[in-house]
Image 1 (spheres, rainbow, N blue to C red):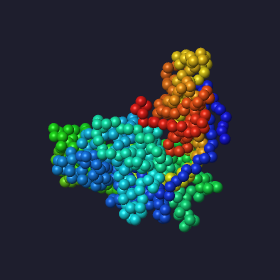
Image 2: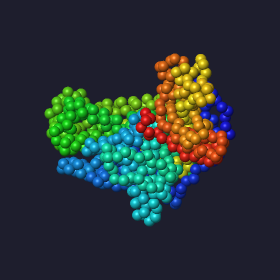
Image 3: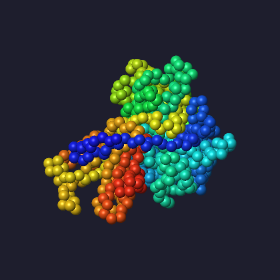
Image 4: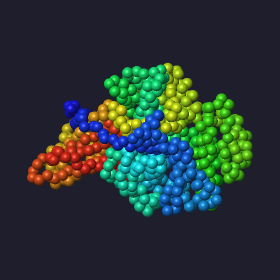
Length: 636
């Protein structure tokens, strides 16, 4: 089934929409999902006969079910420790001046927030100021989590290996194609699908990261964090409804709209859903994902900015830029510990009690450097704050001011989505920071004005991991999605005087006028794409001996885009649209015997978490090799 051809204003035919019937995805009985968070990670799994009362089983770590996203390597590039252990070992080491024995990373996910700068050669600085490739460090984190799951299951008597599992990694909904491919390639390197390609970590200048092509890519899926939360919340509602018909956590409507607001350490991800219960329960995604970077770590950064002003030292230069590199490294770790551990502890408590007074431990070295500055700063402060020994006692007034910018960003984002959706009766507030007492209070008060109920699931810190496993078990639970951008390729079309700009005119081998740099639309922003729908375009070789074709892939937040340069109209050089090259597609074109007409049908799929592309050779009617690369350094 296909719709008819549609022509855009630049006289280029839009890709043909086709409904496929062969969309069933085979799934293993063993499922493992990794919630790769900015601050913490969780792992959930499902094995035959091991489905828990609350859905997929959570992997227990030493710190219970969530472990800090921190990793420690020794001088040989081998993982020494992970999570709280990594922090503790590195902290003890730097305090005695031997920190060069280790390489330490934490909260790496923040380095992938700005999608435009992400590529395969993106570097990240470690605690020792040396640079490493981000994709390789992430791969080691995924490998550790994979190995830990297998170790626990084997110790419990289940004789499994990583290849038994279909794997899922969660990503923020606001990530674009580059960040998603980075995470997928890291999963390949970690050995989630087949062969492990995660050697000892080496500095970036010693080698170039290779592009991984996986033999079994279907063994790894990516899932959007708010969608996972939605799936888990509906699963919980169904379970509770089967025990209690008066459960108030269900939408209890044949068709109803609701939002999932997933607030993690780095991002706020909001997705709008419609739960349809007839004939089978399924979820429709009714808006492209929305969000921003107002996650919980922004409040930690606000506190550090306050501390900078208090000690009157921008960037803590006196503390971390001494003449002793060993001392500098030690002091950087102390700043990190103040922000990510000591302040984090009281941030979690804020809003739980009416009377709040928390203490942040500042460490002897910090107080020794800045004691006089702190006392002078506190004398000028209007807030009720005191330095008691090594502890800074923080008032409710200060905490409220630290939360203000982030809280306003969260509420503004929620209001914007509600306005677009219209009728909303229920919001699920989830994620590690979504359970913040203060944030819940503010959001709940805001929603009361709109007669919208706000629910924080009991298992909100683990909803993403468990929901991701449920998603892999039944990907068709998401029936349709709205496309988040207009996607197209660079193409040529027959030149038309009065329509196309002469500067893009050229003459082909048949002496016909063509126009280059045309944006040939594959799918437009806001289009609703069902799980069985794909978009097809046919490519013919320029010469009989051509063995492959390179297709440049573009995106825009606008619709009806004219040129890939963003320009519009004859002789108008100012871009009307913002158009970005996001990747390239390489398609093999087999050379047939004789003079048979050649062509390749390139099929695009936007109904999944990731954009997928495959190609069929028209002559042989067989699938040919297709490579879609978003991480090529030539793309911006």
